[in-house]
Amino acid sequence: MAAFNKVVLVGRLTRDVETRSFANGGMVAKFGFAVTNRKKNATTGNWEDEPMFIDCEAFNRGEFGKLADRIRDFCRKGSQILIEGKLHLDSWSDKTDGSKRQKHKIVVEEMQLLDAKQDGGGPRGGSESGGGYSRQQPAARQPDPQSFDQDDGGHDEPPAAKGSNEDIPF
Image 1 (cartoon, rainbow, N blue to C red):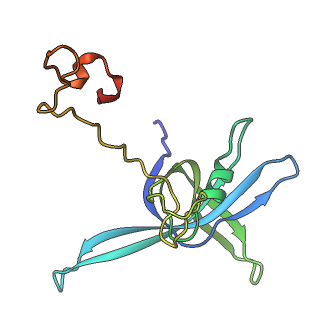
Image 2: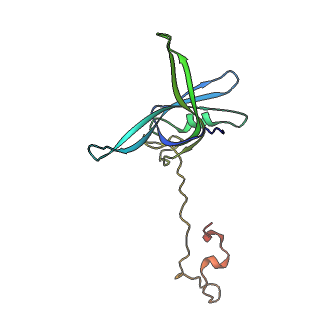
Image 3: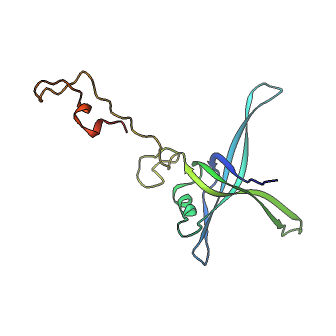
């Protein structure tokens, strides 16, 4: 039987990113992450949010791996992001009574910022609610068929038909 371990989640950071550097130059970024599931309450009939809190880790791996740096630089408590990664089970012995403890965490492999970029400069923006980059593209300009250039000897053609690359929508 084949095994497949892939997690894709959209949620918000529950605390600021904590980083730790290694002697070999690597880095790990640790942060809390919350995802909200909605369910209908059987007794009241109302929809309720059911939050799930998850610990996450991201590493700088390989020559070009800078994921931990990107998370440290562009994310903070409240940032909305999409993460892709693997589910990992951490195990340890409790220091107080020696009992075995376990918890699941996500080892992040990819991250996308979902917050809109805020005014105020800098990668973190100027307000408490933003900090990411917007993925929206500006709307393409469409030539107005009513406006024609009359300076070419009376030929009525829209500006895009004259070879202007500015008006091509791609």
